[in-house]
Image (cartoon, rainbow, N blue to C red; front, side):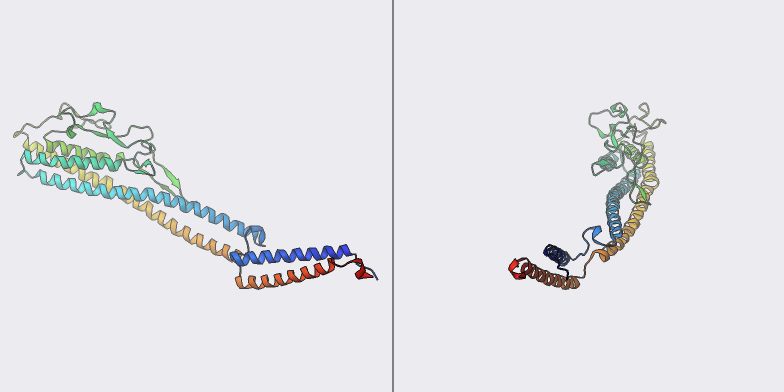
Length: 340
């Protein structure tokens, strides 16, 4: 009869004991974490687990880009809402002032609010999001508007009094990148413009407010036909009352028309375009949420453990480990006398 060597028996016992210890560790981990797969290699579906994790990482990145783009657009939408409101107020002032029952002195009293509205429009045109100017095109580190188109030399010379807002001209930035816009790919199938060139949105409104404020203050306003237009200094002079009272009324009405035209043809379409982009982002966000939920469900089904089953197997593994420890201890503790 063939005798089994002791070292073979010892090796088999140690191997079984280590296997039992591994089972205890495995099922203990499943019970404590609720997952049967910690790493892709822990499962027969390792490629699917790895793929689903990659999908979830990609979706997280896309959701982050959607949130950032939405922030840009929501800020623009808020700006356009405020801009529309202040232009409506400017129209109310112009309509009130155009009534010829108002004297030049009464009209002049309304000018201060118009200049404040213009300041507010400039501030809106220089709005920022995440440190970038929204309406400076590609020149998003430079303000969209400042006094003077190419410097202070383009300010009105009449009235010419230092600090008088009737002198001020605000122009769109001359930065070489100001006409550019930025389109960001937020998902594999969607790219969205996240900023704008403010010249087509704010210029006419600012020019109309300048004309209105100057008319109310008692000064004519004539622009050159250049692009961009600058003050025609020879004709932008003070009214001669009472002779020019009707001219003042006409200039107030012309400024009102320019402001209203800007609101209707520049601001409202810009806000509508932003709203359309926001709806596209919202649709993309909903699809990403669905995709993420689906991928998470697949990954959960592959990874999540049945805690009750794992607990049962843990108990069985601990029992087996204890038994193998006892057997190993007994056998390895025998001496040569046990075999005589």
